[in-house]
Amino acid sequence: MSTAPTVADGASPPGVGSGPLRATPVSAEPGQVRAARVESALGDPADPANPYGYAALLAADRLAERFHGGEELLDSLGMPAEFVPVGLGGRLDSYEDLVAVMRPVFRRDVGLAMGYGMMSWMAASDVWLAGTEEQRAWLARLLLDGQKAAIAQHETAHSNDYVRSGVTARRTADGLLLNGVKPLINNLERARALVLFCRTGETAGSRSHSALLLRPDALPAPGAALLPRRVAVGLRGCRFAGIEFDGCPVPASALLGPEGTGVATALRSFQLSRTVIASCAVAAVDTVLRTAVMFEQSRSLPARAGHTADAVRASAATTGAFVNLLLYDSLAVFALRALHLLPEQTSVYSAALKYLLPKVLIETMYDLSTVLGSGIYTREGSLGIFQKHIRDVPVLSLGHAGTAACQATVIPQLPRLARTSWQGAQPPPDALFRPGTPVPPATAARLSLASGHEALTACLPLAADDITGTGPAERALAGYARALAAELAELRARVRGLERDARSGVRPAAGFALVDRYALLLAGAAVLGVWRQAGRAGDPFLAEASWAAAALHRLARRLGLKVADPPPQCAARIRHEVQLRYGAQLSYDLYTTPVSG
Image 1 (tube, rainbow, N blue to C red):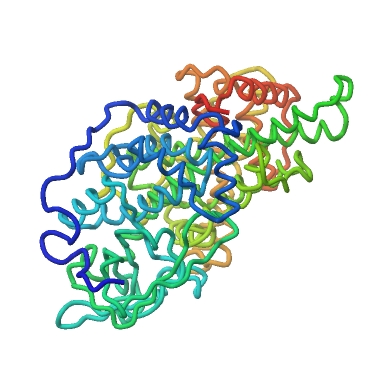
Image 2 (cartoon, helix red, strand yellow; image 1 turned 45 degrees about the horizontal axis):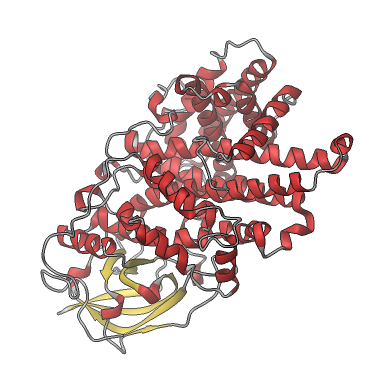
């Protein structure tokens, strides 16, 4: 690495002009319009002549190389502006819009989405939250010019416990001296900016770590050395490499925020990254479901054989997968919109959503693999994308935002939530359940490290008393809502009891199981909220009770509750919608947007 100074040197970081930000028109178009443009530009994925289709991206995956054609296309669409706030010259003013624009990319190739932009956005989020005006302006210019940023938080030697950093930064007369190793950083080889999480204090506690903003290609050699690339099983096209520091000097002005605030910055930025990445994952599983439906139709037997055991199992798998996507997306939409409307509460919602990613989405993909049978081993053509997504999506649930980390975020908050939120709370605003409608600008200062209150669970008892339909689906839905409301009351009693016994809160051993149940109840409340608002939004399918009843039934069974099966017409209606959306090329999420194939 070169001997040039780091990015924080002087008023103008090296390699970047000191003039105003590059003029980048801020689009007044809604996110769904911009998303449609991305989807259209990506084209038919099954067309072998399409340079952005499955044939090209799977060829790159076999070589463990970046999908260069896809990256060039996203550059031509001005995608980097989506990661930069409007106030700094970009288009980012709504996290729901960011997800809308990125879902077409995730639907096509998770590796392209993560390597091209989302890793840069995750790194930038820390800078937008804690950086100085100069640091924010410099990084905005860099991203708008098409350069990449990387973030170094993973601690593979400590099960990704990011507060056991392997890199230390010791104060010197001239600044900071870095020592240690970060072994796994996506995009490090080409990053022009690096957000580095490191230990700056000797004692344990939340003030022991800091974040730095560095320019990796300007770090002095031999103080900083790039480690060889590692090729992963998932995201094979992403470039994972490490960096080793050995007495590497950097100026104190590289600090993001005051020294010792790294943990607080990370906990706030996790609320953004967990919510956005987990919400984007829906699109990849959409493709997996679409591929399974395509395979099912291509293998159809004569009409009278449609009731064979294999056909019934395939139908149940695709129908169940669609319900899971709607269930999960209900919580995703709520969590995304809460970043704008209820930011004080999002530490709970973001953790619950990311916690459910492997439990709902990854399990759904494995369920769908039974439809393909041996076809899941196909690595070419339209079926090849199935295997690629099965390898790629689980990577999204790893790291500092993995299952245990998300549970650990919620466990300390359970006692207070049980005291203040799970009985008699006011429900959240209706706007939280209306995907795609305008939201006010997000206010980062309102993000709270811990939530003393959350409004979503209030939907359970209210809905249980307020479902008035008389049809079989409505009656079933009301019954499931009552069962979940009773489970919430039971959860509250268990948390209060454990709190009294322990005298110091809920112990982790018991808390992990409680968080599992709580996350499922949050998802159930989100489903009810979306269903209640869907009629006003004019979506005829979502306004029906069939999908909501099926979703709550699945949640009740996960909770171990003894509930009756939904009426047969629920599955028939959902099955019809699966086929309708496949034929009309519409997405399998709450937005029902056109897809290329």
